[in-house]
Amino acid sequence: MIVPLGKMKDKTIAAILAFFGGIIGLQRFYLGQKGMGMAHLFFFVLAVSAGPTPFTVMLISLAAIFGIIDSISFLSMDDREFDLKYNQPMAQTSTVGDSAHQRQQFGTMTDRERRFQQRQRERAEKERERVRQAKERNNQRTEPPTTTGRQNQAKQDPGRGDRERGVFYFKDFEYQRAIEAFQKALTKNPRDVASHFNIACAYSVEEEADRAFYHLDRAVALGFDDFDRIRTHDSLAYLRIQNAYPQFARNHFRLASASPQPAPNFEDPLVEKNQDDAPHEPPVTDELLDQLQRLASLREKGLLTEVEFATQKRRLLG
Image (spheres, rainbow, N blue to C red):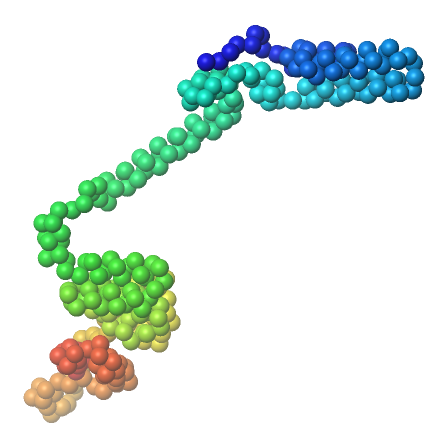
Protein backbone atom coordinates (compact mmCIF):
# COMPACT_ATOMS: atom_id res chain seq x y z
CA MET A 1 0.00 0.00 0.00
CA ILE A 2 1.01 3.64 -0.43
CA VAL A 3 1.52 5.75 2.66
CA PRO A 4 0.05 9.21 2.09
CA LEU A 5 2.28 12.09 3.01
CA GLY A 6 -0.21 14.90 3.04
CA LYS A 7 -0.48 17.66 0.49
CA MET A 8 1.48 17.86 -2.72
CA LYS A 9 4.42 20.27 -2.58
CA ASP A 10 4.38 23.26 -4.94
CA LYS A 11 7.61 24.28 -6.62
CA THR A 12 6.69 27.98 -6.67
CA ILE A 13 6.21 28.08 -2.90
CA ALA A 14 9.46 26.16 -2.47
CA ALA A 15 11.26 28.72 -4.67
CA ILE A 16 9.88 31.68 -2.64
CA LEU A 17 10.89 30.09 0.65
CA ALA A 18 14.36 29.34 -0.74
CA PHE A 19 14.85 32.93 -1.95
CA PHE A 20 13.76 34.66 1.24
CA GLY A 21 14.42 31.99 3.87
CA GLY A 22 17.14 29.92 2.32
CA ILE A 23 19.58 31.30 4.86
CA ILE A 24 17.89 29.23 7.58
CA GLY A 25 16.70 26.36 5.31
CA LEU A 26 12.94 27.08 5.22
CA GLN A 27 12.60 25.38 1.77
CA ARG A 28 14.05 22.17 3.21
CA PHE A 29 11.48 22.05 6.02
CA TYR A 30 8.71 22.68 3.45
CA LEU A 31 9.93 19.89 1.20
CA GLY A 32 10.09 17.45 4.09
CA GLN A 33 13.89 17.36 4.24
CA LYS A 34 14.02 18.00 7.96
CA GLY A 35 17.63 16.83 8.38
CA MET A 36 18.96 19.32 5.85
CA GLY A 37 16.72 22.03 7.30
CA MET A 38 18.05 21.45 10.80
CA ALA A 39 21.64 21.59 9.46
CA HIS A 40 20.93 24.99 7.80
CA LEU A 41 19.36 26.31 10.99
CA PHE A 42 22.20 25.00 13.19
CA PHE A 43 24.93 26.68 11.14
CA PHE A 44 22.93 29.94 11.05
CA VAL A 45 22.54 29.98 14.86
CA LEU A 46 26.20 29.07 15.28
CA ALA A 47 27.28 31.90 12.99
CA VAL A 48 25.09 34.46 14.75
CA SER A 49 26.25 33.39 18.20
CA ALA A 50 29.93 33.66 17.16
CA GLY A 51 29.58 37.37 16.49
CA PRO A 52 30.36 39.50 13.43
CA THR A 53 33.59 37.92 12.34
CA PRO A 54 34.73 37.48 8.72
CA PHE A 55 34.17 33.72 8.98
CA THR A 56 30.57 34.05 10.18
CA VAL A 57 29.83 36.63 7.48
CA MET A 58 31.15 34.21 4.91
CA LEU A 59 28.96 31.37 6.27
CA ILE A 60 25.81 33.51 6.24
CA SER A 61 26.61 34.76 2.72
CA LEU A 62 27.09 31.22 1.44
CA ALA A 63 23.80 30.12 3.03
CA ALA A 64 22.00 33.02 1.31
CA ILE A 65 23.64 32.22 -2.04
CA PHE A 66 22.67 28.56 -1.75
CA GLY A 67 19.09 29.64 -1.02
CA ILE A 68 19.01 31.78 -4.19
CA ILE A 69 20.47 28.88 -6.23
CA ASP A 70 17.78 26.56 -4.85
CA SER A 71 15.10 29.11 -5.79
CA ILE A 72 16.33 29.33 -9.38
CA SER A 73 16.65 25.55 -9.56
CA PHE A 74 13.04 25.00 -8.41
CA LEU A 75 11.63 27.51 -10.91
CA SER A 76 13.56 26.03 -13.83
CA MET A 77 12.67 22.46 -12.91
CA ASP A 78 10.00 20.63 -14.93
CA ASP A 79 6.77 19.88 -13.03
CA ARG A 80 7.16 16.16 -13.64
CA GLU A 81 10.75 16.19 -12.44
CA PHE A 82 9.79 18.17 -9.31
CA ASP A 83 6.96 15.73 -8.52
CA LEU A 84 9.21 12.72 -8.96
CA LYS A 85 11.84 14.26 -6.70
CA TYR A 86 9.78 15.84 -3.92
CA ASN A 87 6.20 14.55 -4.20
CA GLN A 88 6.91 10.84 -4.66
CA PRO A 89 5.88 8.80 -1.59
CA MET A 90 8.71 7.52 0.57
CA ALA A 91 6.95 4.25 1.27
CA GLN A 92 7.26 2.13 -1.88
CA THR A 93 5.70 -1.29 -2.36
CA SER A 94 7.16 -4.44 -3.81
CA THR A 95 4.12 -5.39 -5.90
CA VAL A 96 3.57 -4.59 -9.53
CA GLY A 97 0.00 -3.49 -8.89
CA ASP A 98 1.03 -0.80 -6.41
CA SER A 99 3.76 0.45 -8.80
CA ALA A 100 1.21 0.77 -11.57
CA HIS A 101 -1.15 2.56 -9.18
CA GLN A 102 1.64 4.92 -8.19
CA ARG A 103 2.45 5.72 -11.82
CA GLN A 104 -1.21 6.38 -12.48
CA GLN A 105 -1.62 8.51 -9.33
CA PHE A 106 1.38 10.76 -9.87
CA GLY A 107 1.20 10.97 -13.65
CA THR A 108 4.71 9.82 -14.51
CA MET A 109 3.74 9.69 -18.20
CA THR A 110 3.44 13.07 -19.88
CA ASP A 111 0.84 13.99 -22.47
CA ARG A 112 3.50 13.88 -25.16
CA GLU A 113 4.50 10.34 -24.22
CA ARG A 114 0.86 9.23 -24.19
CA ARG A 115 0.30 10.73 -27.62
CA PHE A 116 3.44 9.03 -28.92
CA GLN A 117 2.30 5.62 -27.66
CA GLN A 118 -1.13 6.20 -29.18
CA ARG A 119 0.43 6.99 -32.55
CA GLN A 120 2.57 3.85 -32.29
CA ARG A 121 -0.51 1.72 -31.65
CA GLU A 122 -2.31 3.30 -34.60
CA ARG A 123 0.66 2.67 -36.90
CA ALA A 124 0.85 -0.97 -35.79
CA GLU A 125 -2.88 -1.41 -36.44
CA LYS A 126 -2.59 0.15 -39.91
CA GLU A 127 0.37 -2.10 -40.74
CA ARG A 128 -1.58 -5.21 -39.69
CA GLU A 129 -4.53 -4.09 -41.80
CA ARG A 130 -2.26 -3.46 -44.80
CA VAL A 131 -0.72 -6.94 -44.52
CA ARG A 132 -4.15 -8.51 -44.23
CA GLN A 133 -5.43 -6.70 -47.33
CA ALA A 134 -2.29 -7.64 -49.27
CA LYS A 135 -2.84 -11.30 -48.40
CA GLU A 136 -6.43 -11.08 -49.56
CA ARG A 137 -5.41 -9.47 -52.85
CA ASN A 138 -2.82 -12.14 -53.51
CA ASN A 139 -5.20 -14.91 -52.42
CA GLN A 140 -2.73 -16.08 -49.84
CA ARG A 141 -3.90 -18.65 -47.34
CA THR A 142 -2.99 -18.22 -43.69
CA GLU A 143 -2.96 -21.97 -43.00
CA PRO A 144 -0.43 -24.31 -44.67
CA PRO A 145 -1.76 -26.17 -47.73
CA THR A 146 -2.87 -29.74 -47.28
CA THR A 147 -0.99 -32.66 -48.76
CA THR A 148 -3.63 -33.07 -51.46
CA GLY A 149 -3.35 -29.39 -52.37
CA ARG A 150 0.44 -29.64 -52.70
CA GLN A 151 0.11 -32.73 -54.87
CA ASN A 152 -2.38 -30.99 -57.16
CA GLN A 153 -0.10 -27.96 -57.46
CA ALA A 154 2.85 -30.22 -58.26
CA LYS A 155 0.85 -31.93 -61.00
CA GLN A 156 -0.34 -28.66 -62.53
CA ASP A 157 3.03 -26.91 -62.31
CA PRO A 158 5.81 -29.47 -61.73
CA GLY A 159 8.63 -26.92 -61.85
CA ARG A 160 7.07 -24.34 -59.56
CA GLY A 161 9.28 -25.04 -56.54
CA ASP A 162 12.50 -24.78 -58.54
CA ARG A 163 11.27 -21.66 -60.30
CA GLU A 164 10.43 -19.92 -57.01
CA ARG A 165 13.82 -20.92 -55.64
CA GLY A 166 15.45 -19.46 -58.74
CA VAL A 167 13.57 -16.18 -58.28
CA PHE A 168 14.79 -16.06 -54.68
CA TYR A 169 18.41 -16.56 -55.74
CA PHE A 170 18.02 -14.01 -58.55
CA LYS A 171 16.75 -11.33 -56.14
CA ASP A 172 19.67 -12.17 -53.85
CA PHE A 173 22.11 -11.56 -56.77
CA GLU A 174 23.19 -15.24 -56.86
CA TYR A 175 22.69 -15.56 -60.59
CA GLN A 176 24.50 -18.87 -61.17
CA ARG A 177 22.41 -20.59 -58.50
CA ALA A 178 19.32 -18.99 -60.01
CA ILE A 179 20.23 -20.37 -63.44
CA GLU A 180 20.66 -23.86 -61.98
CA ALA A 181 17.24 -23.66 -60.31
CA PHE A 182 15.55 -22.43 -63.52
CA GLN A 183 17.22 -25.22 -65.49
CA LYS A 184 15.79 -27.79 -63.07
CA ALA A 185 12.36 -26.20 -63.48
CA LEU A 186 12.64 -26.43 -67.27
CA THR A 187 13.76 -30.06 -67.00
CA LYS A 188 10.52 -30.82 -65.18
CA ASN A 189 8.39 -28.55 -67.36
CA PRO A 190 10.03 -27.55 -70.68
CA ARG A 191 7.01 -25.42 -71.59
CA ASP A 192 7.22 -23.20 -68.52
CA VAL A 193 7.07 -19.67 -69.95
CA ALA A 194 8.05 -17.97 -66.69
CA SER A 195 11.17 -20.12 -66.26
CA HIS A 196 12.27 -19.38 -69.85
CA PHE A 197 11.87 -15.64 -69.32
CA ASN A 198 13.55 -15.68 -65.90
CA ILE A 199 16.54 -17.70 -67.05
CA ALA A 200 16.89 -15.35 -70.03
CA CYS A 201 17.16 -12.45 -67.57
CA ALA A 202 19.77 -14.33 -65.54
CA TYR A 203 21.83 -15.16 -68.64
CA SER A 204 21.64 -11.52 -69.75
CA VAL A 205 22.99 -10.34 -66.40
CA GLU A 206 25.78 -12.89 -66.75
CA GLU A 207 26.41 -11.50 -70.28
CA GLU A 208 25.65 -14.79 -72.05
CA ALA A 209 23.72 -13.26 -74.92
CA ASP A 210 23.22 -16.39 -77.06
CA ARG A 211 21.53 -18.33 -74.28
CA ALA A 212 19.46 -15.32 -73.27
CA PHE A 213 18.22 -14.84 -76.85
CA TYR A 214 17.37 -18.53 -77.11
CA HIS A 215 15.26 -18.64 -73.94
CA LEU A 216 13.51 -15.39 -74.81
CA ASP A 217 12.66 -16.94 -78.17
CA ARG A 218 11.27 -20.02 -76.40
CA ALA A 219 9.23 -17.87 -73.98
CA VAL A 220 7.65 -15.92 -76.85
CA ALA A 221 7.04 -19.12 -78.82
CA LEU A 222 5.19 -20.57 -75.81
CA GLY A 223 2.94 -17.53 -75.45
CA PHE A 224 4.85 -14.75 -73.70
CA ASP A 225 3.55 -11.49 -75.20
CA ASP A 226 4.59 -8.77 -72.75
CA PHE A 227 6.99 -7.19 -75.24
CA ASP A 228 7.17 -3.90 -73.33
CA ARG A 229 8.73 -5.82 -70.48
CA ILE A 230 11.43 -7.11 -72.81
CA ARG A 231 12.09 -3.56 -74.04
CA THR A 232 12.34 -2.07 -70.52
CA HIS A 233 13.42 -4.80 -68.09
CA ASP A 234 16.67 -3.80 -66.36
CA SER A 235 18.02 -7.36 -66.41
CA LEU A 236 17.77 -7.48 -70.22
CA ALA A 237 19.78 -4.30 -70.75
CA TYR A 238 22.81 -6.29 -71.91
CA LEU A 239 20.77 -7.92 -74.70
CA ARG A 240 19.45 -4.60 -75.92
CA ILE A 241 22.97 -3.39 -76.76
CA GLN A 242 23.80 -6.45 -78.86
CA ASN A 243 24.02 -6.16 -82.64
CA ALA A 244 21.46 -8.93 -83.08
CA TYR A 245 18.84 -7.25 -80.90
CA PRO A 246 17.30 -4.86 -83.52
CA GLN A 247 16.56 -7.75 -85.90
CA PHE A 248 15.38 -9.85 -82.94
CA ALA A 249 12.94 -7.09 -81.95
CA ARG A 250 11.72 -6.53 -85.53
CA ASN A 251 11.04 -10.24 -85.75
CA HIS A 252 8.67 -9.95 -82.77
CA PHE A 253 11.39 -11.21 -80.43
CA ARG A 254 11.95 -14.45 -82.30
CA LEU A 255 15.26 -15.80 -83.56
CA ALA A 256 13.99 -16.79 -87.02
CA SER A 257 11.28 -15.40 -89.27
CA ALA A 258 9.32 -16.91 -92.10
CA SER A 259 11.54 -17.26 -95.14
CA PRO A 260 10.85 -14.66 -97.82
CA GLN A 261 9.61 -16.06 -101.10
CA PRO A 262 11.32 -14.85 -104.31
CA ALA A 263 9.16 -12.56 -106.39
CA PRO A 264 8.06 -14.18 -109.68
CA ASN A 265 9.46 -12.74 -112.90
CA PHE A 266 6.50 -12.05 -115.15
CA GLU A 267 8.59 -10.45 -117.86
CA ASP A 268 10.36 -13.65 -118.99
CA PRO A 269 8.08 -16.69 -119.48
CA LEU A 270 11.01 -19.09 -119.28
CA VAL A 271 12.17 -17.74 -115.96
CA GLU A 272 8.58 -17.80 -114.68
CA LYS A 273 8.21 -21.43 -115.75
CA ASN A 274 11.48 -22.43 -114.09
CA GLN A 275 10.38 -20.70 -110.90
CA ASP A 276 7.12 -22.60 -110.89
CA ASP A 277 8.80 -25.97 -111.50
CA ALA A 278 11.84 -25.63 -109.22
CA PRO A 279 11.49 -25.76 -105.44
CA HIS A 280 11.64 -22.34 -103.83
CA GLU A 281 14.74 -21.78 -101.74
CA PRO A 282 15.51 -18.62 -99.84
CA PRO A 283 18.38 -16.51 -101.02
CA VAL A 284 21.51 -16.84 -98.95
CA THR A 285 22.01 -13.52 -97.20
CA ASP A 286 24.33 -12.30 -94.49
CA GLU A 287 21.42 -12.25 -92.08
CA LEU A 288 20.52 -15.86 -92.85
CA LEU A 289 24.12 -16.97 -92.42
CA ASP A 290 24.34 -15.16 -89.12
CA GLN A 291 21.20 -16.91 -87.85
CA LEU A 292 22.48 -20.31 -88.98
CA GLN A 293 25.77 -19.72 -87.23
CA ARG A 294 23.94 -18.71 -84.07
CA LEU A 295 21.90 -21.92 -84.15
CA ALA A 296 25.07 -23.97 -84.64
CA SER A 297 26.68 -22.19 -81.71
CA LEU A 298 23.70 -22.96 -79.49
CA ARG A 299 23.85 -26.62 -80.49
CA GLU A 300 27.58 -26.80 -79.72
CA LYS A 301 26.98 -25.29 -76.28
CA GLY A 302 24.37 -27.92 -75.54
CA LEU A 303 21.43 -25.52 -75.46
CA LEU A 304 19.78 -27.09 -78.52
CA THR A 305 19.21 -30.74 -79.14
CA GLU A 306 19.64 -32.18 -82.61
CA VAL A 307 15.87 -32.22 -83.08
CA GLU A 308 15.52 -28.58 -82.03
CA PHE A 309 18.45 -27.60 -84.23
CA ALA A 310 16.93 -29.34 -87.24
CA THR A 311 13.53 -27.75 -86.61
CA GLN A 312 14.96 -24.24 -86.36
CA LYS A 313 17.12 -24.81 -89.43
CA ARG A 314 14.10 -25.95 -91.46
CA ARG A 315 12.29 -22.81 -90.43
CA LEU A 316 15.18 -20.67 -91.60
CA LEU A 317 15.51 -22.51 -94.91
CA GLY A 318 11.81 -22.59 -95.54
